[in-house]
Every structure is written in structure tokens, then in C-alpha cells.
Length: 133
Image (cartoon, rainbow, N blue to C red; front, side):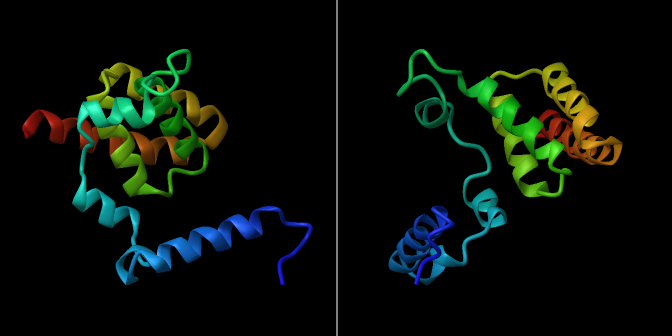
């Protein structure tokens, strides 16, 4: 029986049922698995899914990814795989190193120095890897 005080319980169950219907691999899928499968989304796909393609008056992919990075940092920078993916995608969407580091620094005001430091270290690794590769 679902909890009438939790309107998201039915949605969560629907998502879980969908994952099970897709096969055993989808249900156990993790962000690390996505990172291995699709390290950086092609620019066209990124713009279609995250940019202005479906919402011409909305935010562009670059801005949405910087906001995502800020949120992940404020939450404590614990989701390292998601932060790495977001940094790579933001860079691919046109965000410069300065914009990425400023986004993390601003998030440090809300998430704390420890979260900011972790996110900055991850950003440095990703941005330096981009130069090497």
C-alpha cells in the first residue's frame, strides 16, 4: 500500500518497475557505469537533451551544467562521478576553466570549504586531463 502523505512514492515505484522491465542490467546501473559507457555526450545530443532545442527560451546547456555543478558542490561534493561528468560536459558545452572554478568557488559559500576543495580537486584533474588527452 502506498503512503498517501508521500506523493513521490508512486513515481519512485514506477521508475523501479520500469528499470526492472528493461532487464537486470538497468536496475543495477550506476553513475560510474554511465561514465564508462558515455564519458562525454556529443555536443549535438547535449544541446538536444539539456539545451534550447526543446525549450528555445530556456537556459542553454552550458548554464544548466554550471548550475548542476554548483548544486553538486553545495551538497558536499560527495558524488565524484557526477561532478566529473558535469565538469567534462560543461567544458564541452563551452564553459571555460575560469567559469567552472568560479562556479565551484561560489558554491563553497553555501557548501563549505571542504566541499569546495573536493570539487576544485576534481575539476583540476578533469581540466588537466582534457589538456593531456
